[in-house]
Amino acid sequence: MGKRMAFISDVHGNIEALERVLEDIVNRKIGFQDVYCLGDLVGYGPRPNEVIELIQKNNIQTVLGNYDEAVGFYLPSCGCHIDSKMSKERSRNSLEWSANHTTEENKQFLRALEEQLILEEGGYTVLLTHASPYAINDYVYEEDIEKQREIASEYEEDIIIMGHTHYPYYKTVKGKLFINAGSVGRPKDGDNRACYCVIEIKDSVRVEFIRVEYDIEKVAKEIEESELLDEFAAILRKGTDKL
Image (tube, rainbow, N blue to C red; front, side, top):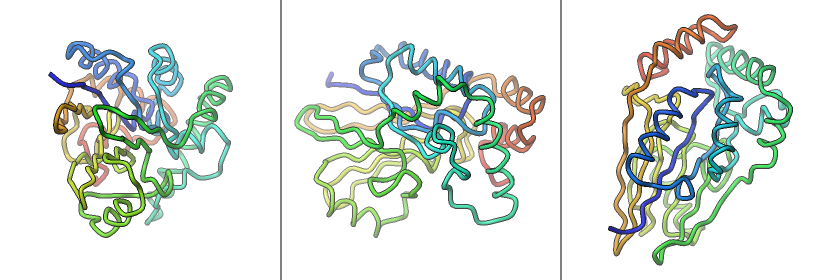
């Protein structure tokens, strides 16, 4: 067996999903020193503080997400691509609530996060970033071949691992392996189970996406009982934001 590492992303205040995912990682005999988080600990979900504190407690290395930046630095917007009045209202509600319910101590933790992390493992270099090497609010979907070619040409790392879109995938472009780890706390690909990624590095790189069941209804009801929008609960139940 080669070196195995786990990558989690976009927990978004969903402590139930994070706890189940970390349990699953432990069951797979991967130590927390080999677990990395690609950001967006907060936003949309009802437990931002618990998520941040669990990440800290387990010393999980984490890069800055656009939501972490917005909450940590009191920004007026999450910097997301917003294409409708409905999306704008979702974003406003989520950011306002999250900023008001995250402690100052935890905001300080968010402000201290770096935007990128570079690993070296088994002869491979790995670039970790929330959205893309260009910006923490950029989007690199599986079909974005031109952007992937640009990144592959401009960056020397062998493997680029991202989150942000909440759509897991991996593909090789110009000899570089692109991985999106999916979302632990707010999947959008139609599967409502928490998603994370395990890679094993030996002579080659093996990528596996793991889906983990958790108590969605518990989190959904907590959202509905808060001042967060009810549709955030519906998104968790359906596993998509296309309601």
